Image 1: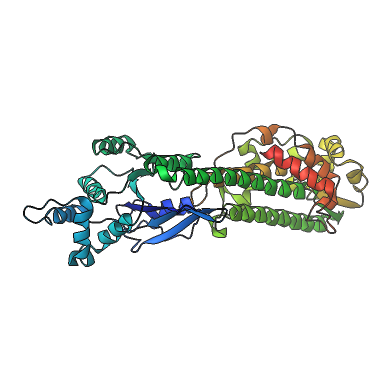
Image 2: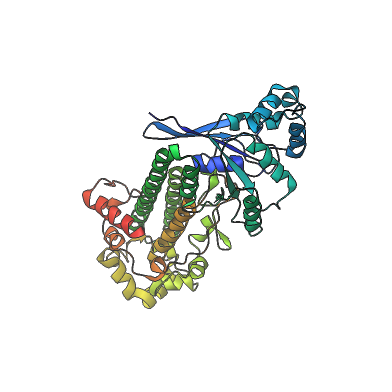
Length: 455
C-alpha cells in the first residue's frame, strides 16, 4: 500500500493557509480563521482518505513573519571556504539557538516542509509583490522540496494575479494554481491536484483517486440536495388544513399553517447545511438575505413574488398581490367574509379548477387551507438558490450566505411539475398532515421525479 503524499501549506502570515485547509478538507472547524495576523502558531495536520486509504496528508503551518532577516542570517552561516547547499545550511540553522528564539516561527515552517514531499505556497493575490515574499521563496527553496504557488482570493476585484504570475515566472516558478478558498472554482481542486501530480509523478495515481472521489461526492451531494428540496415541495403541496367558516378561526388556522410551512422550510435549510458540512449557524431560513428583504419575511410577502418575477396568475392569488386582502398561502381562503365574496366573484372559476369539488363543497361550512402555487414557486426558487450557493461555497467563508436573484424562468413562470399537481390530491403524502404515509410507493416515485426535474 502506498504511503500518503505529505504536503506542507506554507506562506506569509494571514494569507489564507488555514482557509485553504478548511476548504480542501470540508471542515469548517479546522484551525482558526481570523483577519488577525499570526493566528496559527503551531503545525496542525489533516488527512484525506478514500475508501479507508489515506492518500494525502496536509499540514497547516504558522505564517512566515521575518523572512528578510532570516535570509540575511542564513547567508552568514557559511564558514570561510565552505559552500553549503540549501538543506545543509538549514540543518545548521535548525540546530542553533536562533531557531528556538528569534526565528522560532520560521523554524517550525521549515521543519515541516523538510519532513514533507512538497509544499503549497499560499499567496494573497490582493497583495502587491514585495521583497519579503521573494525572500520567503528563497528561504523555502533551500528545503529542496517542490513548491506549488496557490493564488488565494483571486475572486476579489482587487487581485493582482498577473503581477504575481510575472514575479513567480522570474523566480522559475511557472506552474501555479488559482484557488480561492472562500469561493473555489468548480474545477479548483482538480486543477490543484493535477498540478501537484506534475511535481510528484510517483503520487499521480493517488491524486487521481482524490479527483475522482471529489467528483463523485459532489454529484452525490447535488442529488441528495435535490431530493431534500423535492420532499419539502411535495410536503407543502399536499398539506391541508380544515377550518370552520368563521373569521377568527380562519385567521388562527392561517397563522398556524404559515408557521408550519416556515418550520418545514427551516428543516430543509438545516438538512442542506448538514449535507454540505456547514454549521447550523451559517444560515437560517429567517436570516438568509434575498434581494432587499429577509428570508423569513419574504415567504408570504406578495412584493417578493413581484421582485423575483414569480407568476402569480389570476383569481384570488392575483388579488392578494394587489392588496385585496386574500392570503397568498391559503389558495383562495380569505381573511374575512367580505374579501371572500369579492375574491370568489373575481376568481371563482380559477379557484374551483385548482381545488375542485373538495373546496367547492366546503365553501358554506368547513373550509380547507392549502399552499398557493406562487408560494411553492418561491420555496423552490429559494431552496435551489441555497443549494447552488452551498455547492460553490468554500468552508473558509465567514460572511453570511447571500443569495442573488434567480435567473431561471422555469420556476418563475413555467408550468409546475406534475408531481406537485398529483400531491394536491394526496394529503396523506405530507408530513405536515396527521396520519401521513411517507413510505407510500407512489409518493416516493413522485419525489424521485421531482428531484430529477430540479436537477
